Image (cartoon, rainbow, N blue to C red):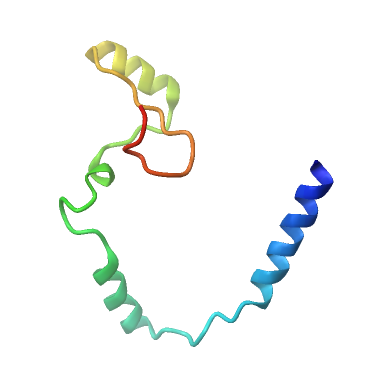
Length: 82
């Protein structure tokens, strides 16, 4: 199993190394594009949550406030199952 993962990872890295990244974006254009793609206020409510990254601290806080704890432990939609 490990050998298969290693081979697959190597193939993916090799493909990425050969991928054409396209022309460079000038700094001023990058700033403009960055402003355009950032979520606007209210557009991504999950991004406005003050997430805690220390599980033990989060557990203590949730217990003290009598609130449930949502643990997001995998990539994906943070508004999924809690």
